Every structure is written in structure tokens, then in C-alpha cells.
Image (cartoon, rainbow, N blue to C red):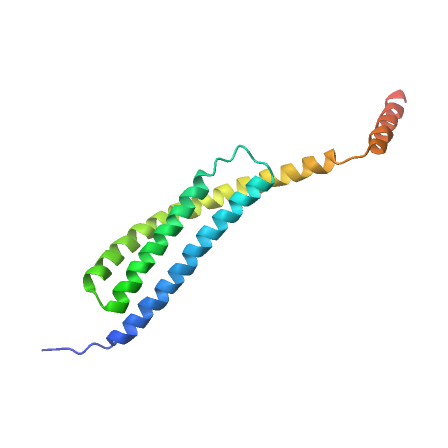
Length: 145
């Protein structure tokens, strides 16, 4: 007995193309946030950050673009083998993206602390000669009492 499918092939194709479009957006978000993070760290002169997490995040973003490309090609052409490869790659990428999520969140908190320390140090270092003389005079008065 043959059962007719409830969802048509064209509906599935459009749904897969839309979901792959979202994967493209997520990958572009990964890549752009990593590039922005690298630029922020260079701006504040952080030499201790070696950028490994950012490089891995950019790589995962590029791999996500490739996986979304496989899905889009498979959905557009209706090639079942390409869609099978897409599903396997999507499962692997899902696990990798969860790992990246936690490592990026941890690095983001560390970077916020470094940037706030850098800004507070620069705030207190940004003084004029009159401020230094006034502070030394005030400190001498406090110690002499």
C-alpha cells in the first residue's frame, strides 16, 4: 500500500534552503565576532592573547559555510547522497559549535576583565603635571599631620 507524503518535495526543499540561509547567517556572525574580538584585543594592546580561540572560531565559521553550502546544493538539486553527507556534517558541526560556544563565552568574560583593567589603568595614568604636584602636596600635608 502506497501512502502519499503529507509534505511535498518542494516544501521540504524550500525549508532546507531557508534553514541553510540561517546557517549562513550564524557562520557570518561567528566570523565577524571573532574578527571584531581580534581587533579589540589589538586596539587595547593585549599581548597575552594569542588568538587561538578566535582562529578556531573563524575556522568553525568557514566550515559552517561549507556545510550550509552542501545542504543548499543538496536541497536545490534534490541529490540524496549530498543530503546524507550534509546531515552527518551537520551533526558533527553541532557538537563543535557547542564547544565553541562555551570557550568563546569564557574568553569573552576574560577579555572584558582585561579591557576594564586597561581602561582604568589608562584613566589613572592620564594626569597632568599640575595634578601630580597637587597630589604630592596633598599627600605631604596628610603625612605631616
